[in-house]
Length: 66
Image (cartoon, rainbow, N blue to C red; front, side, top):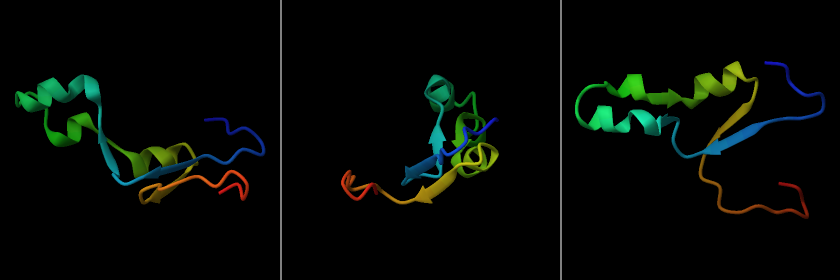
């Protein structure tokens, strides 16, 4: 990845593993295991040099920019 200068990417999520929707039917039918069809967001954000916050966003304060 080539980060854009001056840009910081942050992912806020309550789940650290998220399913890849295209593989869910195969998971439900037993064709795929959990690890095969779920994305490890901690690993992904580390690779992308992004920040991961494991929490639930409850609002955005545009005036305070947070």
